[in-house]
Image 1 (cartoon, helix red, strand yellow):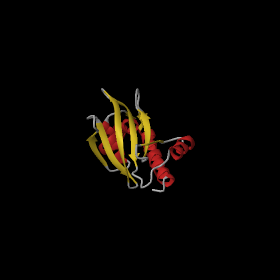
Image 2 (cartoon, helix red, strand yellow):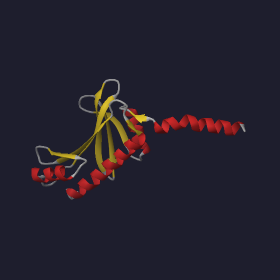
Image 3 (cartoon, helix red, strand yellow):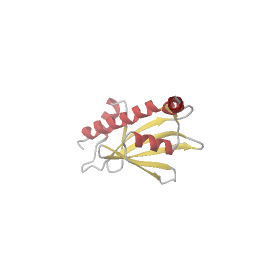
Image 4 (cartoon, helix red, strand yellow):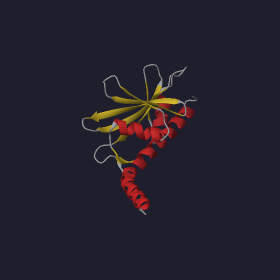
Length: 150
């Protein structure tokens, strides 16, 4: 009986954790990405802000953190592709016009970068929503690789 009560208490204590909001703590984001099955390496960007390096389906990408006073207010997923032949602006604009998620821009050499921003200000987002966002990013990367014949 004591074991049953202990088990019930443990389940009650864990329930709020599963439903907890995802705020802009880089370590929490890192752990959630690991729970999603992604390899992660916590590092810093050129400005010294937190940054995560990861991969989905063999495609390397970064997670940048913005407005990180107490808690980061937003993050951005970003992946760049070094193409043999430059992508033209017309093709990049076609992606941006036709696709809801994933904004494309070109560097000086015509190499495309695709980004997706996530707002975490205020109450943050739910864990399930964040997992769905990671899955959306996975789909965006897959679709974009097909779009550029990667």
